[in-house]
Amino acid sequence: MKQNYNKFTLKEILGSSISRSDALAAIRADSMTYQTFSSFPLEEQEKLISFIQGVQGLTITYDSFFKHIMNPDTHPSRLSGFLSAILGQSVKVHNVLPLEGVRMSESGSFVIMDLAVELSNKTIVNVEIQKLGYLFPGERASCYLSDFVMRQYNRVKDQQKEHFSFRDLKPVILIVIMEKSSPEFKAVSPAYIHREVNSFDSGAKVASLFQTIYISLDTFHSIVQTIDTNLKAWLTFLSSDQPADIIRLVSAYPEFLPCYRDIVEFRRNPKELMFMYSEALAILDRNTEIYMCELLKKEVEENKRILAEMGSALAEKDSALAEKDSALKAALLQISLLEKRLADLT
Image 1: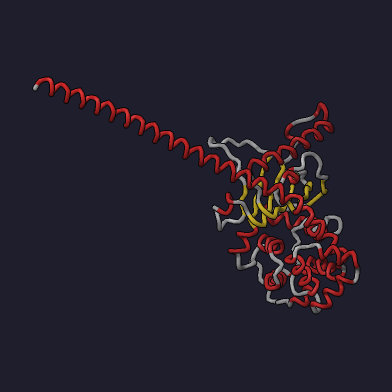
Image 2 (image 1 turned 60 degrees about the vertical axis):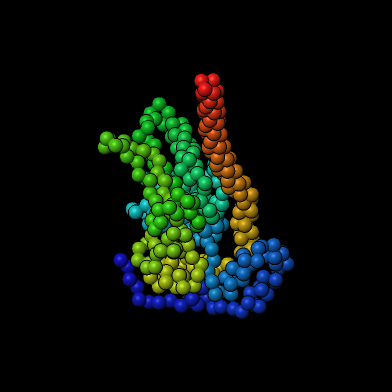
């Protein structure tokens, strides 16, 4: 457990604050910057004003901001430290990979950050941050991982040629960080990190190239009060832009101060801030309609299923009533015959 008693102030972390009018003046100084800012939803505008003022942090889970802060070329230890905390072992990022092949992130949902890296031991790690979790997380992850494995297979086989062996293939790990987790993960709250475990009921030791790790930032942020591990420190960094959390984090882990100093650069450069934020919101807007269509389709299918069940139940009731009506008619006929026979006898 790490302890640090040097409590930082927000001014020491984000710099001296300015007034709201000064923040707006900085935005209006460039007409294109102000035009871009004015196109944002009011809620997003308020967040950016507060950030430029220096009274609130910046959401860094968006692709451009995350990659700026975690750039392995300029800050090689940050991404390695982040992955080491999640994987529970010391790892080192060796290379950033191009996101070629099947781009599952473009098929829907709010993917706001996507990064693939190769570690020093050749393991491939894909980190994805989602605004909202996918509707079918397991199925989608399986397709994504299969694509990565096949790309690796083709590349290694082409390199090794006749000397190729399956033992040359390295694991592929998918880390999915959800700002708002899907129902499958909300159902197991308060657990906020979900690591896939591959095993056989016989105990046979058979290696698998797949592993998926899901992280629920919403669950983490709602239950974790103490920042006492590297993992909690990194998840706090990702999950909150609130002053109290920023102060707690840097006071417990001062090594995050340079990360916030890099973020502060955007306060002094509203033009770049608006450009990068605009890119991030464009990705969300592009995927919003697709995602909502997925939800609507799922709701329609569920309603059809319910109606089919109700129709089946009504059909069964109708069949039962028809049988009862037929039996009643047969009974009445039998009574009528008996009454006639009785009348004949008398």
